[in-house]
Length: 412
Image 1 (cartoon, rainbow, N blue to C red):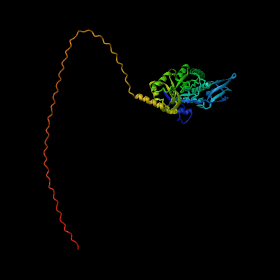
Image 2 (tube, rainbow, N blue to C red):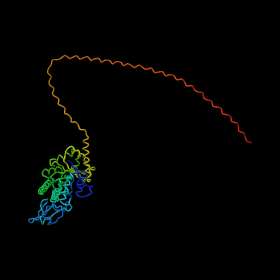
Image 3 (cartoon, rainbow, N blue to C red):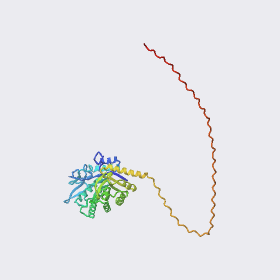
Image 4 (cartoon, rainbow, N blue to C red):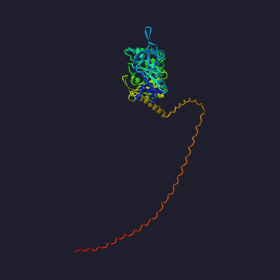
């Protein structure tokens, strides 16, 4: 199945809440949506008496993502949905979340399922899994907190970038990324979180995220899947995605680590020297959607395709229209009959020696009968028309002489 949807709340949506966005996506005829958790700003407070005994998903009006508890002279942190709050704990909650609380997130997840909309969640954009800038721990926390929200939403994937190489060798940076992702996955298992972690392909040479690197990480870590951002791949590789075969080659490369489902992004892109400059609408970039549609037609892929174009839902609907056109054009072609392979000629058997026969006399060709001459039809003599007598001309009537007038008398 192929799903299309926008990256975030549609631009045409009158409301700006997540509930409004899900309903608007359904009304537009789309079947996917990626929730944006682009910033994580935290507030903190002490747990009240009412909070004691509750889990974070049972606290109304707040999205609590961390519990801090003092134990044996130290502080222990909990980020899950099943640890009960105790008196004296410190609660950390999102200053501006995607919903009011976990109960609302669960309701939105049910609504999305009933409307047949697949949800995913994009974690904050700036991460540093290679710890080049000393922000690895903060990046790991962001992915964990995004997993809490995604689990409540019944979202399938938490999408994240990986960060820069910095001054590190690519192999060293990749190993650090792997170790830190392994720690995050361990915390996912401890928190009993269902979503997988999607590693998005990068469009910059200085950022970890080539297709081969994503495939290697997915092979090494269970619970990690590649996210095929075709605009980034196209820019990073110098504009290689031109034909249906080019897209199919990318699918084949990640098929073994994709769990039979592909999560991908698409948009137009401006690029130079192997680096992405900016996203563009699909019609304006040199990355065309038609070859991808042809590849999807030839191979049955289970794909969720998110529009990261500046036009969001408009380009998501445009991709769906293009795919429908390609399908209609394919159905309109006459079915070609399969060519029947020609049977291989049998080896000729050696003829047995036979007594020489006298050449048979050739029969004389029979004389063809001459065609009978056609009889000429007798010519008909034209009938003589009777001569017409000239009509008698009547003598012209002579004009009567006018009477002479008497001269008038003169008056004296």
